[in-house]
Image (cartoon, rainbow, N blue to C red; front, side):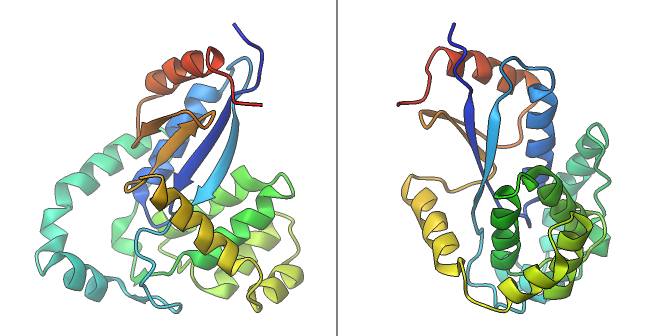
Amino acid sequence: MSDTPIQVDMVSDFVCPWCWLGYKQFAAAAKGANPKPKLTFRPYMLDPTVPDAGQDYREYMTAKFGADSKDRFKESRAHLERAGKNYGIDFDFSAITRRPNSLNAHRLLKWAQGQDKGDGVAEAIFRAYHEQGRDIGDTEVLVTIASDAGLGGDLVMDLLSQDQDKLEIQQEVMFFRGLGVSGVPTFIYNGQFAVQGAQEPDKHKRAFKEALNNPPNP
């Protein structure tokens, strides 16, 4: 068995509740793993056509899924609420009033990962949206998250006011679409195989074993 670190790319979007659940399930599997997998968050946008300023959540859901969207997703949301509690997530779908454009949130996470603060910032963004109903497309919300993580609010405010990294994030999203990723979360192990969706920790533990026998290409 190889001691080569396991490289995992998690392709996800912050507006996706399954992504947060999937991340927590992965983290539960990785706890105590030897060697510990190295996780890198990769951006995805389920709907890149959402305006930069976002839009009213109810109007968005009605336009995209129909007037009965609330009833259509009732069972799915109930499942998420039950499953989330097992991993310390308290989903509150009733708190969500805006459907944000998640591009700037992905930019913030990119900068955070560059300073080894990716996990904490990702958690904070997921929590802000899915538990607190905050608009994670809003600059002030993202600056507050950055400040709380010790990233420097003024610097992040300045970066978000510019177009730095926007094209890079968009190109990365298109790259994963080109690989065939159409649903998230998708966990890509060593660039060789994927675990799709929010999966119980045991499935990731089996993937760890498979990845150890198939190390990343040099």
